[in-house]
Amino acid sequence: IRTSCDDVVTILDYHNIRRANLLYMCAGSTFAYSFASHYPHRTTGHIVGIASWVLRSDPSSEVVWNCNDAATATEDDDQKVVRGSKKSRAVDDNTTIATPRYMHSFTHRMAMNGYFGPKWIISSLVGGIAGSTTSIFGLASSEFVANVIKKEMSNDEQIMFDEQFPHDDGASKFAQLMKWIHDDGGYDDELSVYVNEDERYGNSDTTDENNGIRNAKDGDARDCAVCLSTQQDVGLIYNNSVPTQRQILLWHGEHDKMISVSGADYLTSMMPNVTLTRVRGGTHQGIMFFFPEDVMEALNRISRETSVWNMEVPSC
Image 1 (cartoon, one colour):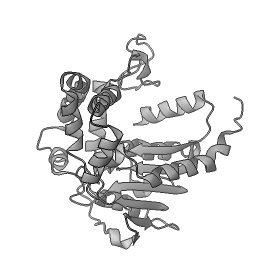
Image 2: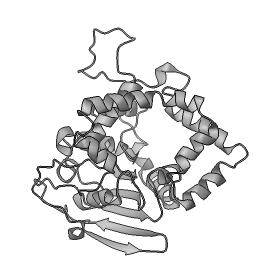
Image 3: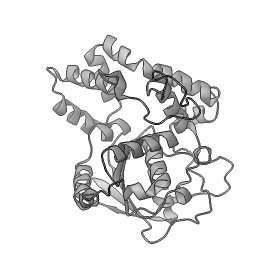
């Protein structure tokens, strides 16, 4: 996680960007909040999160969380908006709060509790499977690839899918898109490498070919290991580690089967200045493929408000 955060800083420096807004989806949440924790002076204080993956707390935690203690909700025709405390943290900064018991899917809970074996074995297996995704997409029919994704979506999201990828050649275009997303590095092997060395896996004496860790099977395995970890494992206690942000905007589908909306409720209670929009009928895949309209409005507004911050870059 720290190496990935260092990579972001290197890229920001290369492009002479002093501060950045943070946008994440799913498992990117851990990296976004870690970056805000390690490099608060390189962020604008604006975070936008879609379908947030939430790290569980250590099961031995004795403090029980209740979302009703720190959040209020208002409803409109399509969404429920939940706002956390805007003045102070919802809980004491030195207290670790237990996460909702059924926040993660049944399969994820089984993996976290060790029923499938040690975390490193599970991560390695997932890394191998994920690393083979491109080959699978290449062998499977376009219709099969499209249907695998669509079956996890709600009826409304499936309609949006068909509108975005019409039946005549839509499945083929979607399959090509998925292959491109999972084809690590695209057509250039140099596109997907860590720009900073991870001290545990490399050092300055290694050759150029081995310098840095390629984000292919090994990267997927590490991502899995992060998701299976606890807040204590990675040193990211939401109500303690993350500095107060100007604004954290979260969107989460109410029909998300991978990470329940209760996880987003938990984040809303753990940090101040959080606004959660509960997307009715939204699924985990659906709201990541098809951003709710107000997500784009928020991104454009934040971009306008913060663009001036990078207009003058001090020389080194």
